[in-house]
Image (cartoon, rainbow, N blue to C red):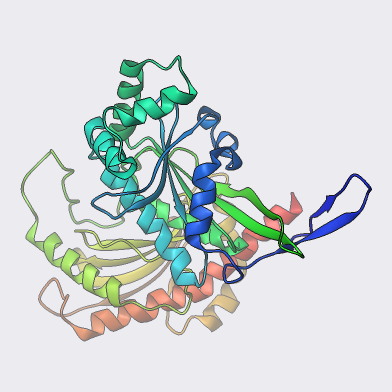
Length: 392
C-alpha cells in the first residue's frame, strides 16, 4: 500500500493527491504519450547507468511482431523499447513479457537501415532521422559512431526492455520467470510502475514512476537435460532434424497451448523440439524448475521439481524436505525424493510404440502432475524466499 502524497503551497496549505485507476480518466495511449514526451521521467539511469541520456525516436514503430509502443535511443546507439500496459487481469500481465521479447527478437534481425526506414515512416521525416533526432539534443554526436552503435545494439540484442504501467502488483515478480527460457540475447528488462494521481479538483495530474525490479544482462545459458536422448544440434552446426524431436515439438505445442493451470500467474513452458519442457519456479534465474519429460530409454514419462545445487540454494531443497509429510498429504500421487540431485520426481512407464504422443493417458498424466506440482511447490518456494528476505 502507498501513502497518500500531497502538495504544499507557499502559504503552507496542503492538497492531497488521489491515486487513479486506469478506468478513472486515463488510458494506455495517454500514458504512452506522456512517457514519450517526458523520457527523463523514467529511471533508465537507475536501471543501467549507460542509459541516463535517451532521445525519443517514435511511437508505434512497426515490426514483424507488431508495433512497439515507444522507442528511445542513447547518443551511443543503445536502444530502449517501452511497452505500456494497464493491468486488468493476470493473463495481461503474463502475455506482456512474451510480447516485448518478441519485439526484441525481431529487432535482432534488423539493420540500421531497417530502423531508419521505420522511424522515418512514423515521423514523416526524410534522411537519417534517428541520428538527426539525437544530434538535435546532443550536437557533438558523430554520425558514423552512432550508426555503428545502433548496428551493434541490434545485432547483439543488446536492448533495454521496459514494461511500464499502472497497477502492477508485487506478484508480478513471477513475470520475470518467463526469462529463464530466453537465452540468446543480451538484454536488460525492467518493470516500472507508473502510478497516476490527481488533485481533488483535477487541475493537476501527477505521474510517479518507480522501478519494481530489473534483470541483469542475460547471457546465453546452456541447460543440461536429465535424460539420455540426444539434444537438437544448435543452429549452424547441422541441418539434420531428428524426426523424434519433431514429434515431441508438435505434441508440446498442442499440449501447452491447451494447458490451463489453477495458478494463473504460473509461466507456461516454451514448446521445444526435444523430449522435455521446463516451467520456471521461484526465485527464477535457473534456480528451481519443474520439468515434464519423455524418456525413451526406459519408456517413461514423468514430472519433477529440481533445485539447482549450489551453496546459495541448497537450503531451498532442505526446507522442502522438512515439510515432506505435509507435501505427501497434498500431492495426490506417489513420488520420490532424490537427495543427490535435489529433485522430487513422479513418473510412469508407458507400454506403447515410442513416442506415445497420441495417447490420452500421457496428456492426462502431464496435466494432472504439472498442476499439482505448481499448486504444492510454488507457494512454498515463494514463502521460503519471503521469510528469508524478512530475516535479512
